[in-house]
Image 1 (cartoon, rainbow, N blue to C red):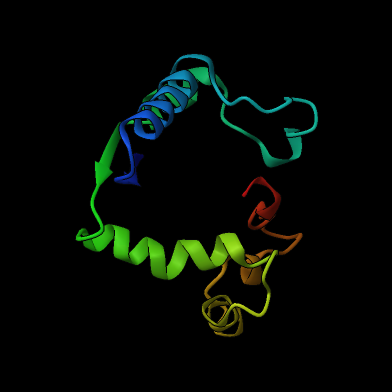
Image 2 (cartoon, rainbow, N blue to C red):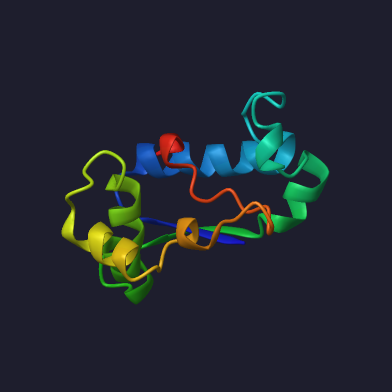
Length: 113
């Protein structure tokens, strides 16, 4: 996985790089017991999965896509009247629309946003 963040300031970018590096080295910072149902990757499997960290500007098409899709998902539980979130939800574009007991998918973990 390549993780890209939008250009901000040096302190914030260094902090985000630090979070990325820490996850690669030590694994996820969540309580393993309460997170077990989400089947988080252990550190030894997460390390090769987190491939790259980078910074992009607003001019990046990737960042523009994130603004259009990821941001509404982040806001969804806090601002359910968000128009973009509503369109994603009503058109069944969110993982939540495809989660069943049969396939074992749990959907978006909104409360981490």
